[in-house]
Image 1: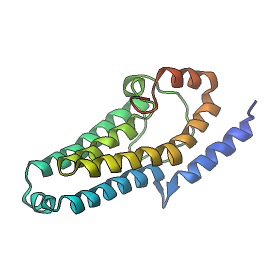
Image 2: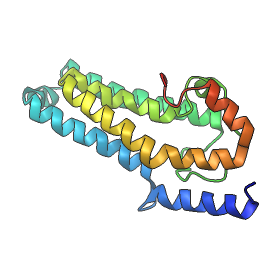
Image 3: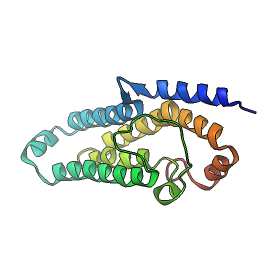
Image 4: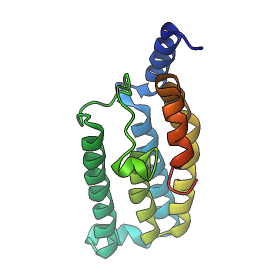
Length: 171
């Protein structure tokens, strides 16, 4: 049995680990993976630079993907009743299992796959490489710590949710 003090210590260490320079580490990882994928895209498809400067359809697709991502984040956070300015993974008060959370235990992280995968407009390889790196990094460095906090906070309820809902969308 986990004591309240142990749960508090776990939450504190999770919060410390998931923050870097006052910004949530998941944001750093997400945008770093996008940046690496973007750099790889430019390297593999140098014509993308001209297209990006001219504002062609591919450029519009990349911009639209980022806009869709932010729209989804707002909708997801509304379901969680969390302010957009709240970037720290704090004390979970309620386990959200409806809406987007019925499809994925991590819908915001799934949503960030949209901008990453949009890189495929110019380079499918860059998009796949960046998405793979993103999923591995998020699973290893972010999600596992968040899941420990949720297990400690919600116990059997969270376990049932995990059995019924995939971590991402397909597994």
